[in-house]
Length: 320
Image (cartoon, rainbow, N blue to C red):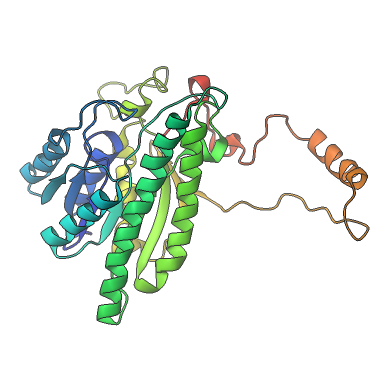
């Protein structure tokens, strides 16, 4: 009996721990050959000495279960190392079919306390890392498609966050990066459609090394059952989006955690005001907008958190 991803190859970045590990194991379980990427730094802020061991351990776990995997130790935010990662997948499996961008770090700080380095480092790993990998994967798919004269098989699954959807006061760098990833995803979906490539983004909520303090007071597993916030709740959606079954799903944003998947619609206009004259004056805008916002909650943001039943962790931290 064939598996959904038989004959396909995948890259998962940041795959040594947490969400990335669960996603790599799930893709392998579904039949894909997996390139397990991780820089191997122990700190969730990207600090510490880099090591090839964590990525190799996950690759060995996949092989021990009867799957196919190789490890890649490298920083995907480095343009050349991202190219090397795609080249490794092609050299190992003959082609690349699936890209799961998951790698990231946290350097939390309020906007008035954040340093330039704290901003740059998070944008670099999350947003530039997603761009680097998407760039080289798309070059591969476009070249193959042009050579074949027909669309090829390509799947991109990017990792955004509810921190982008509902705001995260202590994470302006992280929230901005995750919002940028959604924009990158929708742009890529449009640009790559004619080559047979889909691109989607997920907002996962999971208890991992990066969120261990955020979820300290949240529900724990009972009677030996699966943790409601286990990364294993997220991985099946990644497997689905990577599969032929999701050929008609692209440019989408989905929230996933604990047995729940929510499809997020694009922003909609909630109200429109037109000037009674040739152009607006201050007084006319004051007369129209001040009463409108007076009837709304002072803390109601662009994407109301109650839509997803979201509750922030301490200090406005993210839940994914």
